[in-house]
Image (cartoon, rainbow over all chains, first blue to last red; front, side, top):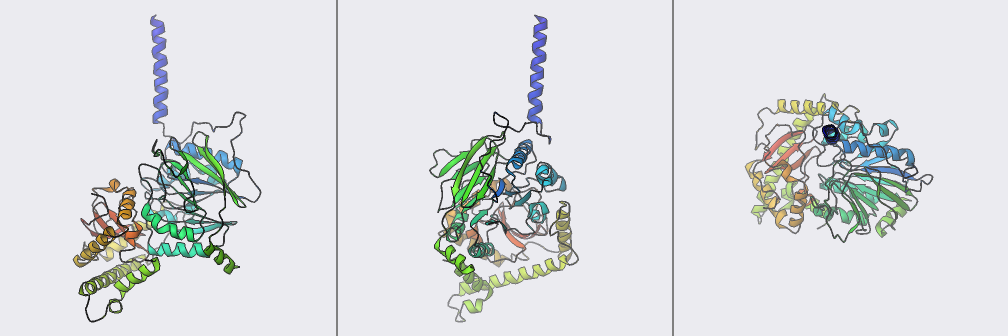
Length: 315
Length: 197
């Protein structure tokens, strides 16, 4: 009887120690095995067409804590399977202080496998970011708060939603109207649409940007800030995503009963992989534990008349 | 009102009061605001001369792998600016007259058709995260404290600034921030913010 009691005590202490260790363990090494389907292969929903543009998306990632590292591990597994070569960052890239050690812990270490494989990160600024991040070479911002870059026939517009002044609005209008890219993707930190209860949509920003986006044929808008994942039914003919839970998370924060949500996930961290092939955009959103929480294909929208005229003039 | 038209009208109002308003003084209040705006613009330009002078001899880290070099440049630039304006104090750029003008412009935006959107946008920016922080002229903006995003419709109602300067609400203050130096240029304390009461 005494021996049984002692064995029970030892077992309980052992379990308790294990649970406590896991709860406070914020060290760098992820102890989660990269998950897989039952036959050991990753669940890949992308077609992996030749000459397609493939990238990953993360947002509000820069915590330096274990869930960020676990997401990064999943990202590396998918990089090997999908072969994406760049990542869009939705802002809040580095939380808290911005010492060299913070960049190391909150970016360089978790994403080291990706960086070593030559994956490029294209960041935009969130409200927790320091303007000095525009000079940090691995973020590829080239000293600019807002900038544009092209990959094949997809043009990306990274904006600074912290300070949307007249100069930036003029720049966006000029850049979008002169672009003849097949796909135009804008991304910035503060979402124009959101069913998150903590922040919600930035309606003033929406007021300023939507007319420009609609007039100039923006196809997709991606944002972070809300620490959940959400995909929307098209608004103004544009596809919207919020992905702000690649490090941070607000558990259970999505409003119920939304009429604009197409898909939402708020119980774990995620990242997204995207493939653009011709007129189709394939996406797959994957959780920290490797579960596919959303996936699908979006058809490229026809360009509005004004954007079509600009294309013709360019040619 | 289109964006382009709004920019042109704001520019005319603050940069060319004699062009914007005839000499018959039929709008004395508007002429007064135009004069205050012109004075503000000149004070900003004077500050920018100090900023540019401080930049001489420093190399901005255009693209650096080293995260250490980024705050290093900020600190060096801020230190040189402080040397060049050692007596700087609140009111050097935001004079009492300018403070009155800004209060009127902010009130105009908040009471206008975009007022409710401005308030909601401001709430979006997590103002609670920096409530209670008070800043001083020539101080560095604290590392690790998130900057408030500015509602764009409100920004469009304020005088335009050169590239390296930005307005930000910090708690109950409106701050003029030198972004590359991460330095507080001037402060309007106890300003009306878009925060819902």
